[in-house]
Length: 101
Image (cartoon, rainbow, N blue to C red; front, side, top):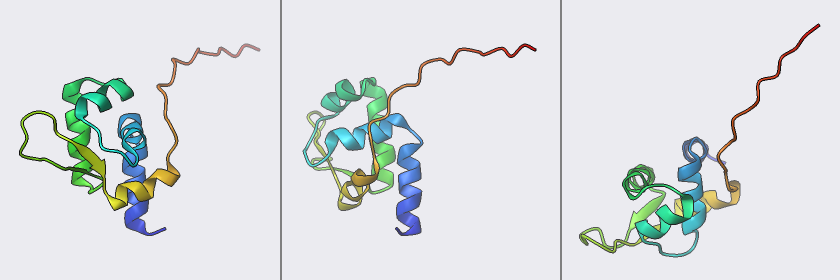
């Protein structure tokens, strides 16, 4: 695996939202509202995550000039990362363990 791919994989895995967005879009074409509902994030935040993924050339908007109904799909690089990703869930708060002697 090339260093650039490793760096992009680390970038995606650092955020469960970016990770889950790539998995959800997969080989299909999705609207931001569909993505937001699927990964349980607000419309405002999904736009930020999509912008981040676009900056790394992992996802592309097919109709950038549209005000509504934008469509997103993975780039070849984005699809390449899919084999290394698995769904990430929010971690529950860990209970504190006290150790007594």
